[in-house]
Amino acid sequence: MRAGQTFTFDTFYNALSVKKWKQTGGVSSLFFGLFVRGKGKATLFHRSNAGKITVLWNKEFENEICYEEEITAWQRLSEGLIYFGFTASQDCRVEAAYFATAAPMVQVPQLGIVITHFNRQQYVRNSMQRLRRELLQDAAYQNVIHLIIIDNSANLDPADVSGARVIKNHNYGGSGGFARGLLYLHEQGTFTHCLFMDDDISCEVESIRRCYAMLAYSVDKHIGLAGTLLDDHKPWKVQEKGAEFSGGVFRPLHEGADVRPVENLLKLEQDAGKPVYGGWWFFAFRLDAVSAYPFPFFVRGDDALFGLMNHFNIVTVNGIACFSEHFLSKESAFTRYLGMRASLAIYLMVGQGRTLPALKMMGLAFLWCALSCRYQSAHAILLALQDVSKGPNFWRQNLDFMPIAKRIQKETLQCKDPAYFQSIPFRYEGKPETRIRKYTRLITLNGHLLPQGCLRKTPAYVGEYTRGLLGLTFRYQHIVYRKYETQDVFESQLNRSHFFSLLGAFIKASLAFIVRSSVVRRSYRKELPVLTSKAFWQNIYRAQSKSDSGH
Image (tube, rainbow, N blue to C red; front, side, top):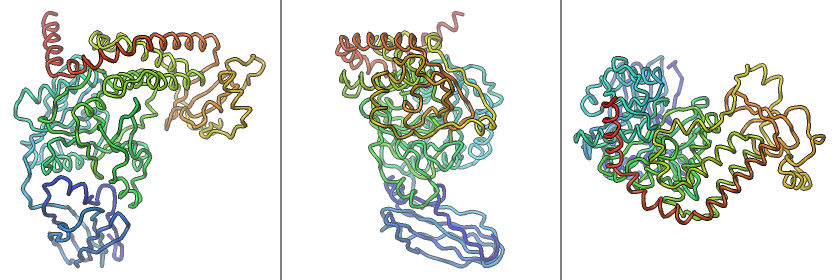
């Protein structure tokens, strides 16, 4: 720091959230430590939820000093943020700062970090290098944190990830990979906690340290610690901080929040909705709280049902987070199939499971895609309805998902250079519409009933998740879509015969669902405990082991 400079650390990673750490039940005392070289003044602040700032203490430093002091106000505080600021009297360096406690741990967790890997060797190698350097070689964690990589693609060289236990596994997706990791931890008999992480996720190693501390000081036997997911391209933007499931719909909480303003940090620590699960990009829990294993979804929906069935008390806290591409930039016909079948299946298994709301959920998603000429996605949603309607045996018979995945047609993506987007004006906001235009769109099925001469010959250029999308694509024969936050585009053509073929098939599938819905719902609820049991996955991997040895 230069002489006269002041920094305050009231930020997402540096401020301490009073309420969340008090709720652990084990942090009975709090200290603040600082290591400084030079001359300056440190001040410790408390900012309440109402925005009131109180100075807890301040102290002047000179020369080289490592200082630690108890925060006596900790006993009377119940909410808000604690953070420090530093003003340099002359050029100096602030080497380190930390919060600590003298309270004994509620327990010393034996934490198994389970990463499910599939064909992302470089991601895992890079992550492993950082974890080995910054965490596993730290004497404080060497015997209490262990890394287990479930290698679903069976192509990871253990030498590239030394320090981790690599388990080669048949590819039953994330569900199977994490189930295999759970089995391993339970079989060892020495682990007390588990942390699920995806192989394509990056996070600060400090988040794992804080996760360990929160598990160590928590008296809650049903804690489910969910890491905040931030946008990799806009790292100040929240994708999800806990999530809820209602009416067959997954809802990320605090979506779109900006973590930079300190006012937002206070709001982020307030409960928004009722979080019932945490995404498996970063989700930690006690092993003795697990009564249900993952449902064999392959991917999508497994984390939601796992949280719902095990009744975790979901906790999120500022400063424990990871980064990923935005959900919407990865959406495709393929992921819509996975997401919609999971939504419908979970709604039938643990939701209200009513027939008409279930069909409304599927029908609206289908029409949104079909009316905007994204026929591959509409077809994927139709397949999701048909497959879920087959009942629980569908999941048993299709643990190996890849053969049925071939039925789903993918959009042909093209990567365009930035000049393309400067010369072609893409629309990302809908336009005001008259009532007559809206009714015309409705009656003509967004242009699918209009004669050819009424359609525009020039393409429409739109963002795929633009609000008012159907209005922007109305009367266009040719549509160019841009994927969310990427340079990728795909194109679609209005095709009447394809549209009505899909619509007819969806109506037929809907009628069949109405006739069988009560039977299907009862069968799902009866088989759910079986399909999420430890014995189910033990039998799967026992049979797979015999099959592999036979070959």
